[in-house]
Amino acid sequence: MSTDRRTVLALVAILTTVGSGGVHRAGAATLGPDQPATLEQDTVRADLIDYGSGAFPLRADDRLTSAAARAVLDGIPGFLALPGLDAEGPEEPVRLLVELPALTTFTSFAVPPMSSFGCCKNTHIKTVTVEGSPTSPDEGFETLVTFDIAPEVYDADQEFPALASPEVRWLRISLAGRQVVDPDDYHGTTFTDLRGYGQQAPREAGPDDFTGIFLTGGGGSGPNANRIELLQNGALVTGCRQSGGAVGEISGGIENGILKVLAGDGIPSLYLISSEGRLLGVEVGRSYGRTIGEPGGNPTPCSPTTSEPINGVAAALEACESAVIYGVNFDVDSDRLREDSDPALEQILAALEASPDLAVTVEGHTDSDATDAYNLDLSQRRADAVVAWLVERGVEAPRLTALGVGEAQPISDNGTAAGKAANRRVEIQPACAG
Image (cartoon, rainbow, N blue to C red; front, side):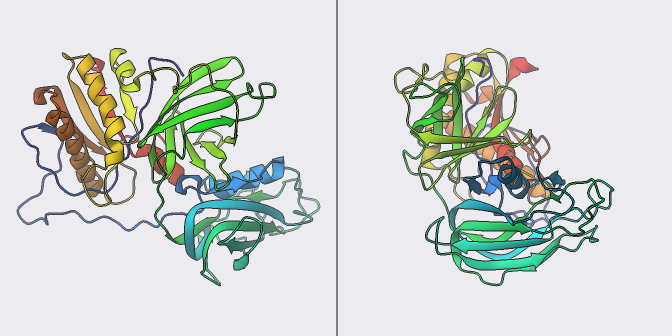
């Protein structure tokens, strides 16, 4: 990652109100005399079987199960060909083991509409079975649902109620058969997406969950092979990644137990620490390429424990570029900043102190859940809260403009939970960027 485009991570979510306190507000949502004091938000069901919800595959090492994991978990409704499966479908069910970030109760499961195009018509997997276990990825499973997918439903999701709704932490998903078996059809067997709806227990990262060194494979063998080293400080995570001869710093932040990182090329990634202590990661949107890090390895060349991490916000502002920030977290349905946000906020403060003549705009960005008006109001109030925090610590108010952008400027696809997670952020725009 280049030093002129660093990221610190932030969370923008549901909020209520905060006074401007003399701070300049730009683009704030205004309420007329007949409007309620708070804006209603739409109810949007979260897909709990999605990378963005913290669901990650375990032991998906071969091409077929790796492709099945991407199809099931990437949240994208497009059809994905399953490698090695011809027009007769799988001889044995394709089985995928998925770990959820917390105990979850499912009420229903769904697949997106089928395709009427020649490439994909009637080629989809026919039968899906989902089992769940609360105790282990190896035992304690019971069937949550089994259903057949109708081939000619082109305009609506097919949704199926759960047969049982225990609390579960691990899912065993089986994909069997093909909608239409035709030995003369040269199109392979496909799968689109599996969605799960219900309730999930709150999840939080422990104070040192992401601190450690993780071997990611390749680059030789032994403790100096390819690896990622991370150091957690509240919701802020800094680190170093070595891949072959390339070495780059990492800067990110934790939201709901998930680490979010934005690479120098603008592609976001999500990471989670599994129950087995492995670092599980996925690149969002490009190919959903996965990273699996096993604990171990020597310190990296830019180890965050032996050298002072570069302040990513300062580096971006010095280069007259915007800084994308994850790790500024708020209480649910509140503009109250959480204590774990302090390290990320302190990076912003240090960057502004290093450039005392620079004026900036603090932008709040949301995903597309809820209405446009609600999201605009939400992002404005959260931006106000960040600006108020900075003013209280000595930054001159005229240097700061709070701007709620809402969902208008996504950096990833709002159609998936992973993309929505990447879009919830704060950005610092320097005035020199024009």
